[in-house]
Length: 498
Image 1 (cartoon, one colour):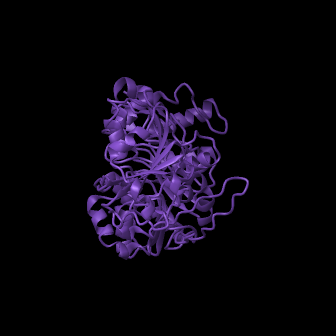
Image 2: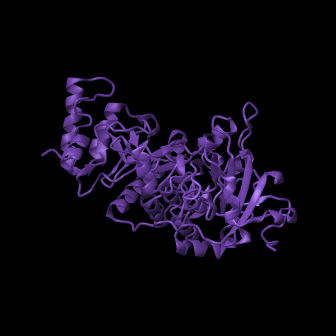
């Protein structure tokens, strides 16, 4: 009975139906769940907890690696289960509840959650839910399509429930490199010097007595939404590749660049797709998520190795990869996000970080998480980990949107996630601005000259010129006008002056 998936036979008596484990969850508990960008998440227990909340209402704090799939966050929100959520989400229903104040959201750099648990800065985890492909004869948990925060959850939780997903083949064993940094003051160096270095175990080790239950599921991850590359994202990718080409020409990079990190979404996908058609070769990645484009680059012979915390791909790519996993296993590794996002490793490897901005201002400050300064979108994610520590920190966005009624380059951002000191290059569909080594006034002229949509360029130049003439200073601003464009949009539906 299930011995191919539960190879430690002493654990066979802990197999239960989902309904049998729901009584383990109590009001006020801190629950942790595997899952990173819809990959390797709880497929049955969390949804069952939402469905059960009418008969036995509870509220919990839910901690994950990143976002969950299968609308699980929406189900938990609608059922009233969530009191507090961290560190990242992408769900529309949950987002509205956060912005209403119905759910308290703790937005964190993705490297920080593990550190805070390790150092006891967060409440103890009552129950950790970990998706696994199988349990080894020695009792090790073999993760599925992500690692995320699962190792620290299993290590710190009072009880562990393992969801064995039989839709994931057992040959995923060996895809993972599980390593947890030591607690302070005994922290050792994380000895990763190349993206393909392995320093840990292939499994998550957990004390057998902590395993409260094992349940079975059979469901693939939610497929990634791969947006069609449009003219704007293609233009952004083109400008970014021009920047890389110039770096090679000037001898600052080789044709293999440096290890790449790319945030999720269609812009990152477009950039990586563009690299497949370029002269660059021998590329590597040290990132958080592997999307379709990463496997396309591998298949094209451009990408030699990719390290991440999860694989989040379309349904078609999922079948291509996992039906032929032996083809990719020597080219891919999945790590805990405490390693994939570790500042120490990012700095050592000289990562080129490419992340998406909601907006940036004329001095290079970036808002990547809030709409109009107050409404949470998804969260900072891992962009802060990479922006602060990358060899080259790049942020991309379209110059204008909504029929050009919104400019994404502004006098001042309404929320700062990444200040100007951590931003090297900004790119829009209009062009790119290399800000390295420039003073604030030089940055402003470069951004206005290269990145702003034509409908807003003259007014933005006027704002800067008047700020210099009337106020002066290291970073000239007209505080009475700094957020005028947002005020116009709120009142008139457009940032344009009438």
